[in-house]
Image 1 (cartoon, rainbow, N blue to C red):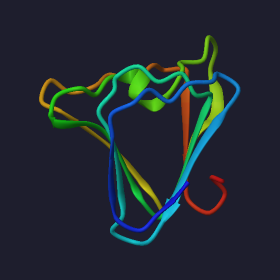
Image 2: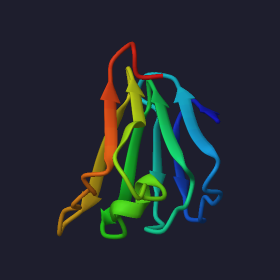
Image 3: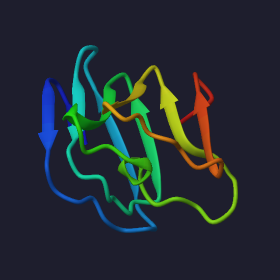
Image 4: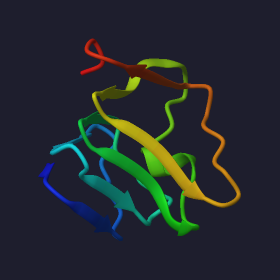
Length: 105
């Protein structure tokens, strides 16, 4: 999906074989309130992907299904950013490979 502003998404993004690709303008943000998504891979280009909102709601599965074994490039951020917005913090599984920079996508 391509966004040009802040999107607040309260639904569940499902489909273990699917890739959630979020692109947009600099300054655009995709906030997900749900803590239980099951998409297979996350690709972020230029936007900010935020797990949780208002200090609650984010968890490891806010970033999609957790792979059973380590996956290189499970999350890719090319010119984009990921953050958590949960006052308790979020511990990500060691199986989530995160790649940043031009080779990410």
